[in-house]
Image (cartoon, rainbow, N blue to C red; front, side, top):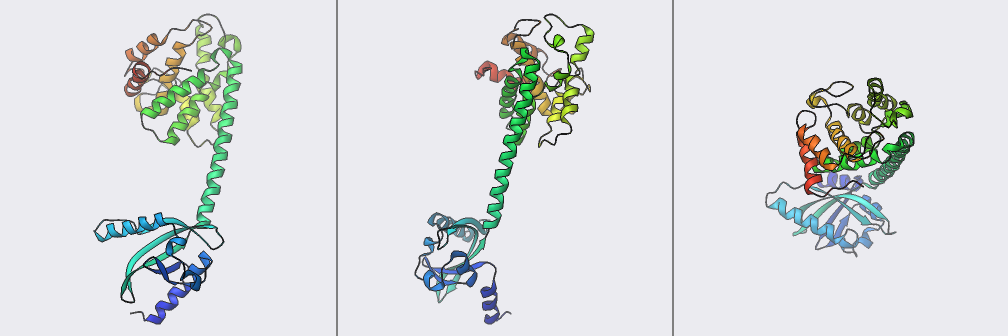
Length: 322
């Protein structure tokens, strides 16, 4: 058994703040806690505990303590913040337990300073946000490049991106997965920059050779993007967006779930938007025909669940291309 002298030594030399709080006031604070809050023990003895730790956090801790007493499996540690003597916010983890002090109930509170970790997390968050914005600007630049090359599809990628994102929302995808679909859709026709402009803007049906050349654009887009370390599988989504469930698509003839769900979404959104928009070789076919196309080929060319969501969005929920 450890004797009282050893306990006192451990508490005095502890790297965490340790306090005994009774009836809302400090009865004891070890040297580390005095260092964290910037108050001496004499000053702390004159302060209520909620002058240092927010009342809301104390109430939360008390509630959790009661729930633990009643047998609930409640975490012992609560993140909180306190203000030191200079008014600076200090982020901490609080751990509290009931003890007896001088014959009366009291709280033993351990306070672990996590300010450096919180500051590092904030710096990381800001850095990631800057990278996200830079990535978005890069995607936008690529989008504009494609649209300058093929003016007849100006806005096509953006509208496909909007519809693909709406479909992904209905599937309850994570924010990261929705971002991947949105970004990939925004530049899915990047590979068309390798196709002669006279083919892209040809006012008539393409011959077999011309159509074969157009069909290379997913592979070309993939080849351009594959060396870029996006936080999402954008290059693969673009490579697969013309694949079809029955294996009749291109360039890899993938079938069913061999095709990424993101690419299956993009494939449906791409077909619908293309049919409702004007092209050099035809006038807009219209939304009804577009929805008839995906419904007729539900389960053969297009993923059934994605078709059903698209029909629901466009028929019943009033989704409109902007």
